[in-house]
Image (cartoon, rainbow, N blue to C red; front, side, top):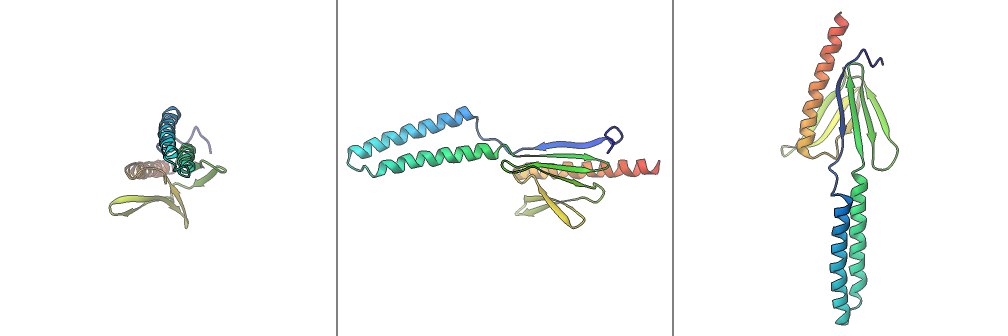
Length: 165
């Protein structure tokens, strides 16, 4: 592809909404740990010492969940559209990146809906389908579907005009 010949019709990076900052998450974990420690001490003073390990397990599970949330927020998808190609570069939070190139002339955008909420945004071309923006909220998914449809239409018009010349 000659980058100077084909204009870029869409260059978007889709990212999930990140959780709170690391500092805020640490403060929340410290407050929960302090409260659980206070309750555990209270139970131990009343003779209910078997409850204490479960209070610690509660804090450990919360720490694990917060860490998993921070890791999941590192995923992103880079979508770049020119008249010659639609490039979808997927970077999951874990695992190898995956790059898919489609011909924009044949790509169709499908937005599956249930109860008026966009559930799944799928790109289809030549019998293949690729889901994009799975981590986006329904409103953002709907907005991006419209943006991508418009960009694909502009790319097709530009391609048809340049072919006629």
